[in-house]
Image 1 (cartoon, rainbow, N blue to C red):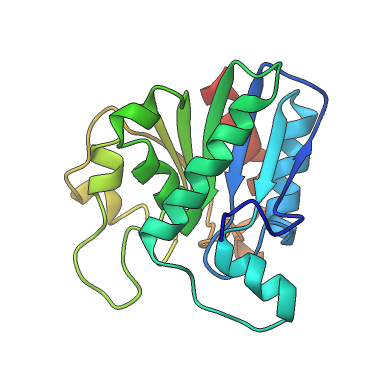
Image 2 (image 1 turned 30 degrees about the horizontal axis):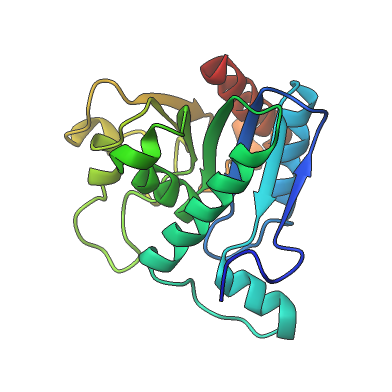
Length: 214
């Protein structure tokens, strides 16, 4: 079934803008999670349009209330590519930025590894990139190193999927930009004793994203 046939799959927020941010959710929470809504509203306040969508397995979860694991990468990427076409169909849009939380960020980077599709993608922003697979193993570096457009990774300093101590030891391209969220976990949440807050880290993530997009 087409990614777009299950309604509503996506929504577009914000006043018409020449820059649209296509925002993909992570593995465990859909497009309407608090994190996704907070990021979207903050980016809209910066003057961008934001398009949030659900991958097929989340569409099915919403339809019958059952919880499913994520689809495999080819199906996720096919849906993402379809959303990219819909984003470009908006008449005022000249630039599309891919942004994704965790798994969504990895899919965004993978999509932009395709030279044909990369010509329709301005930039990629990964929110908590899942460097280390859940079952262990080598870090997932290829999607970032092979991405055909500029990449920004926004990462919590103590993210269990790749933290501030580990990441500098890995062979990543110098062109990849990083923004660190103080004491943040995989969703940028700091410990109470850190002296910062989740709201402050989200605001920092939104500000760094806006600076990167321009």
